[in-house]
Length: 145
Image (cartoon, rainbow, N blue to C red; front, top):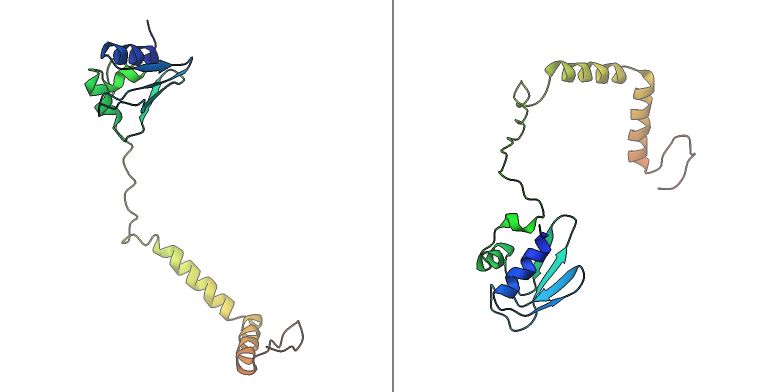
């Protein structure tokens, strides 16, 4: 059984197109747009053939002119396509998509507890003083703004 790369090169030659072949790659005239130059690049990959037209022709257009399909780009194509549906998306969260309300209640309680501490209030006073005079009255000493 021939490889996908060999099948493509043979199909190009059967169409009467010029093919310049190397060991793992080839350049050929593109059958899709009828080029005079070698604008179609072919390369043997790991179990497949890669092709690229530098004039911008789609792979499917090139294969259609050669009477080949996308399956012919692979050394061992699957016999039939096996449909595998995607996993369903998770349902949106309850409560209007904002998450669990108890989480937000817990966060509010934590914030209230924090605001009730003396350290938090002293930080607020320091920030207000800093905003008023333009210097930070904290641990770094008095500096300029």
